[in-house]
Length: 306
Image (cartoon, rainbow, N blue to C red):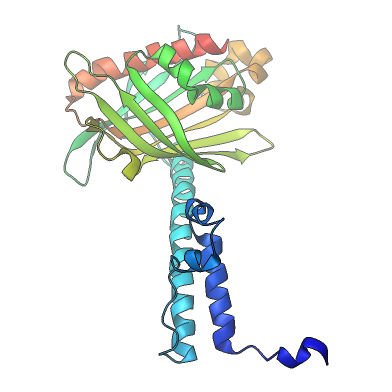
């Protein structure tokens, strides 16, 4: 018989207790577990929430555990789906067949500088009743898509291009998604401001090397009280692909015909930007400034990528 005389069948209460302990230990904060790793297990267990299972029937306890697990799963799905929704929105906004430019105003059509940028402008009213100036743009850069995307998130490179940047860093990364903090210095007439946002970068088509990059503001306690004006990225993002992918389409076939024999060395970029900088910029000012500012910046990017 040996030790078998001490064994008994596990009850539902035993199984539920074990699963509850296992689940909470596996999902508890690592910092808390590490704090108790050299101490008796009872001290760790005293910090773990275990419901009073002695006063309720099995069905009630099972429903409690199932409900908690479902809540956690729903939270996870909600967080994951935000990034996926952003990709879908940017894919739509950068597809001129699905989202045409008919109600956008062309404010710059540059055929003389290297980036050959086009900029479109539209006033958008937010749910807060505030009005912002949204932009759509397209241009070329002399590199592969991935190199461009990596350059655009390089802190040192971006600070070199824009002296107004105070801080720019990705402070949490999970797969294709990252949380980013970006702040700008105070200038003569504009207060210091910052942004906290979720960013996701995804290869939409591996065969054609098409990439999507999308961002949206989030709330994060780590950056709640910075003393700066908090801007709001409603939606901002990029679609980028080898220039060769679009050379058989009009109007790009004619626009970029001088590059047809080296198109594989260039990328074609489309950008959508809907950002509330928390500053009122009249439409006539935006028409005169936003196009030229973008042109200047993208040509600097172009030069760095050569």
